[in-house]
Image (cartoon, rainbow, N blue to C red; front, side):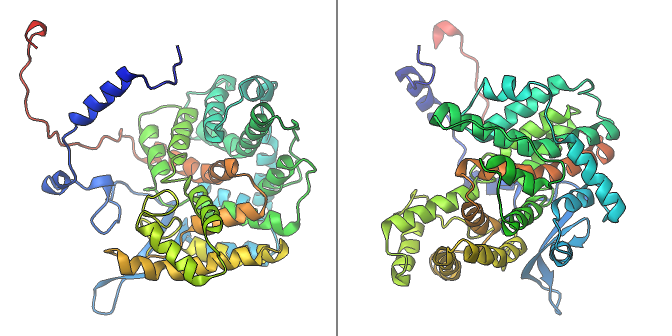
Length: 451
C-alpha cells in the first residue's frame, strides 16, 4: 500500500467532511466570538499577564483618543532599540545578553554575562552518538520536523525529564538554547547528504565563539565568515528572540506548559506552531515572492514592479493568495521596530556582498506596497514592512539556505519560549481551557439498520 496516496475512498470521506461543515464566517459575529482570538481591528484578545516583553502600536492623543503610533518593542521593559544600540556601540555580540535579560529580568554585569556565556558554551554539545543515531540514521526532508523530532528524542537522554521545578526547567531550557544551532544545522547537513547527494561534513562548535559565530562556523564547509556577517546574524537573533505572549508559538508554549507536561513536549509543540507559513515560515514566502517577481518582470522598471504588486493583490501573480508577503503585521501599523533596525544593517550587508540592486528592489517594494494596499483594500490600520520582509533578504545575503530560515527563527525564539514556560510554571497554576460555542443543532440517534 502507498500510505501517501489520497485514494478515491479518502476523497469521498473528505467531501463528506466538507459537506457537513456548516460553520460560516457571519456566525462568529452573531455569537460574539473573537475569531482567531482577535478583535475586529486585529488586536489580540487579552488572555494572560506577562513581564517578559511588550509591544506598543497605539497611544492616546491629547484628546484621549486612541491613535496609531510607530511600533515599539521592549524586552523586560528595555526598549529593543536601546538594547541593540548598547551592544553595537560596544562592538560586541548581543544574543547571549538578550537571553539573560529575557530569562532573569535584568541586564547582567560583565562578570555575570561572562559566566552565563561560559555555561551556554558548556551546554553546546549533544549526547554521545546522538548525531549518528537520531539525525544521520533518520534523515528527513523538513528541517523543522527534524528539529522537533530531535527535541523529543532528547527527553530519552535526560535523567530527570519530567521534573517541572524552576531549577530543572531552567537547566533544560539553557541546554536547548545551546543545542538548537547544532540540531538545526546537523539536520540540514544530513538532508543535504542523504537526499541531495552532497558531501557530508560535521563541524563541532568552538567554545570561544558566540551563538551566531558558531552557527556560521558549523554550517559552512570552510567554517569562514566575516565579522559583519556574524554581527548581523547575531542582530537577527536578538530581534527574533521574543515578541509578546500572544504570538502563536509562544501562546502554544503557555497552553501546553499549563497542562504540567515536560519541557521537551512543550518546546516541540511550539516548533510545530512556528513551522506554519503564517508564522515562522513567512520570510520564505517573501523570498519566493521576490524570486517570482524577478523571473516575471523587469525589476528595474518601477512601473512594472507596481503592476506586479497590483496583480499580487488581485490574486493574479505568484501563489494567487492576494497577499504582498512581508507587508503588514497583526499588531504593528505605522512601523515594525524590528524591520526598522534590520533595514539599515541589511543595507550595509548588501554593500559588502555587492547586492545593492537587490536591496534597492526591496526598498522600492516597501515604499510602493502600502500605497497600493491602501488603494485596493479596506483597512483598519496602517500597513508597513514587518521583520520578515528584511530577515529573508539578510539570510539570503548570508548564503543561508531557505531550508534553515525557519529553524534559525527557532534558534532565536527558544529564548522567549523558555522565559514564557518558566513564567507560566511560576505564576499560572491553572490549565488553559478557553470556551467554544457549539452551533450544531441536536440530532436524534438513528439505529444502524434504519439509516
